[in-house]
Image (cartoon, rainbow, N blue to C red):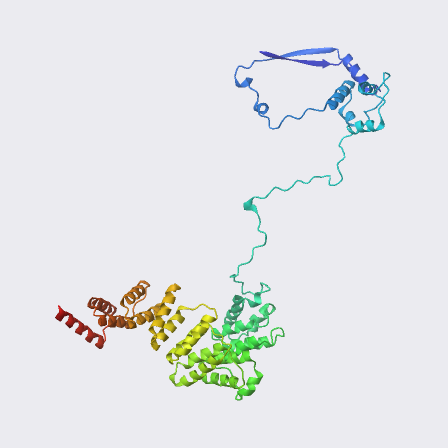
Length: 513
């Protein structure tokens, strides 16, 4: 058992609050008056368990280091002032530090025996400033700002706002405003769909008036062309008439050209008898649109008249118009002389500009007309422009060289396609097999025939006939029997000439055995 002893002081009298005694004398009187001391002893059982005798963890492993020791001067003055009966507020204030205090003067160096302080004023000021409270800071910000913590990598914001997707689809409703809505194809084609959904008795102004704030010059040209694709030339004309009344949308050649092309395609355009005067009034864009409309509508005579008028007045139309006109005229053998005239004009042009599709179409027509030199010149021109050559163009040139009899030159193009790793289509396989049959190259012909079937294409009758001629000419009866089985499965029958050669080869094989 351990005991704890506590002393309780009982004061028989209370000091008068109105007394004007000093703090030191008051403390002395209190000490002298507290005479009765009551001692109380509390008994506590001694610890019997092990953990009761251990030091708590907060003392064994303190979170913070112990505070540094107090300065010697501070402890000295605090001890002396406590003995003198001064409070903490009096110590911190400057009034309690009286240089004439006997306690302070007794412990200050440089004082004489009479207790007179001989400190200088700057020393007294320095000692007094230590007890005035907070030491003045340097000029500047008195409140120190705490720096923000470094952000974690997964919480970092991008350096710029995210860019919108290019393939977004803006709503067709005119309520959504955008600066670039007037050139968005989805918005303009949406106007055409809204016009198509109108009842026949309603006017297009019901839709166009709502979209007017978002339109600019040339915007309605795409809407009018879309109405032409939908087969609505009347609605296209109404849209053009509405645009004429808008000062911010008209005059505009693109809108006029689109309207003229749609009306010419559907044979609803009134053509003046004197085309020379019309040529002086219309711009080149409008004339080209009219020719395109006539070509698409099948009015080749009117298209030829406009081309002739432009040629006589030294107006050069676009090269693509010549290509489309050549392709349409070549369908009728009676127009071959017109095709040759246009080909000669196209060959004389220095500013030739044709797309890959138009160039391939013109090369096909030249091959049919046996203008093989034009095929080669167009192929070389297309390669010099730096554009990518397609498989269709290679196929066309290979076929042209086969027809011309240049088999080795055609084989060079096949090797060039293989080096470029082109993916062959069915016409390319067909032409290459025909070339290999002409060269009597059985291994390569077998290889390309196998690749044709591995690619998922079904061989046609002419491919079977070409390979049968190759095998019959080389005397390969086993290969001929394999092809004969495939022909029977496909439902084809051999020609009379091939059948005669088959019978002759079998008879020779039987006689030889």
